[in-house]
Image (cartoon, rainbow, N blue to C red; front, side, top):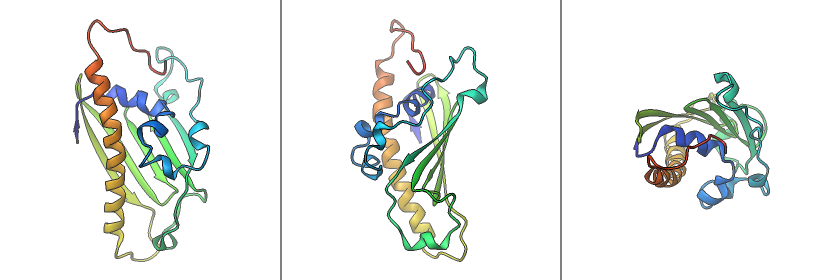
Length: 175
């Protein structure tokens, strides 16, 4: 999916845990357990980019999530046993996400130019223990939901990109 923002803005987006209640109040926020939006699990003391090795800039977080039980959940090998949103940010441009260990999503943000990014999704379910005829429809529904969330992010990121200019202040990741 072509997007009109620099891929580095997505890096800032995933560092800003507080964007969920403000950018995703109708899509993602209602699924979060009460108080989860105010309980960031992202390390607050990430080292400056100038001195950090690439692997030190990646992180994992778990956010409590209200997962509605579905009949197909009993037909897969769930990862873990907690109702959480797993987010593994692989610096610089990949998010590996799991919704409760049932559905897995890889988001890749590929730079095209200074103000263009191609966003790629790969979605799958946990390993099935038996045939699930409805799985394509289940995944399609999850993909549509993930795209709605990404579209909400894209509105903000494209607006930020439009506000950038050569004479603007120097950006500092995480500042």
